[in-house]
Length: 371
Image 1 (tube, one colour):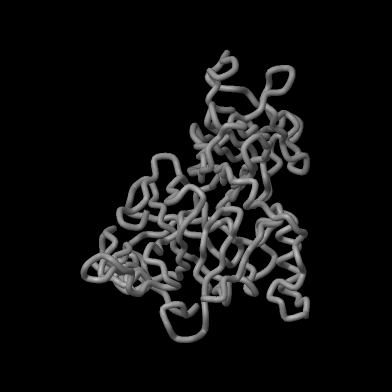
Image 2 (cartoon, rainbow, N blue to C red):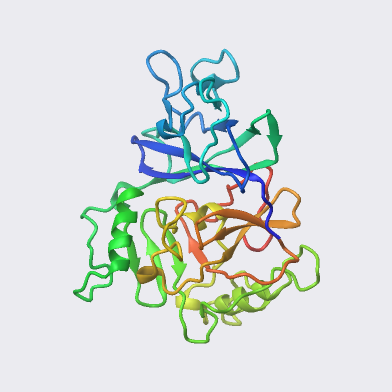
């Protein structure tokens, strides 16, 4: 089951210490008519604060295409100054076009984040809270949010060359590779490396992804898996007992492929024993831009292999713990699915700049054993 709540979605920004990056917040309406939103966007005061303009106001801008000219930004708590400020409150609204709907998938606003020169490499969550999404009336709509993330990387991991159109090295630039190049330009030209062993590494995020296939193995794109095998919300289904345990070479599926004496690694997909489910924020980093997608499936299949245009499991549980966030590669939308629901697709991941990143939702908790 997928809920029809409106969802405010925070973006992922990446840069080295001392740089300025832009964080975007977008809206998925869930089919509702939305004419105004309000939310608080938190930030790490020491390592990744939202920049302040000369007049003391947040360095944020509203999307001029959505006709919400009365949008206001303010640091929180009210009256705060400098490092006493821990969030930015944004009211996206218009008094001249009160009932004009905000398009589904539109970005609402962007804020500039100044990464501290001393910020350690890692991922910093920007939690979304105090949500208020309204329809004409006004009528308050059910809503939820996905946190924004700022990832600090080493300068040495950033791309040093322009993106190459021939992504797979076959001396032919295909339509899919053109789509990849355009998407890469729009999101900052991430350097994706086909490792040649069934994996793809994103050198900006540090994530290593499973490349899907048509070979009838665990990696086959047509295979789907259950979250629970007992009808509740426990991780007892084939997603864990078959898929992850098969990748990691052990019954628990959390990385126990060692020799009996513990001195050597035995097995594990591509020589690794720490494969896991991606968080919803991590899964969204491989979507093609812009959102919503105009290409189905919404991923670069040249790099990541065949992909079904449907929902993929993430590890991020919803606040009630009976549901989990999914990313739909039909159009790039984010939704919620009951853990006791039928099967869904999956793509495994490992690593990351910040290790096992679990930041995604206010009050949401990753499932034990899947990070």
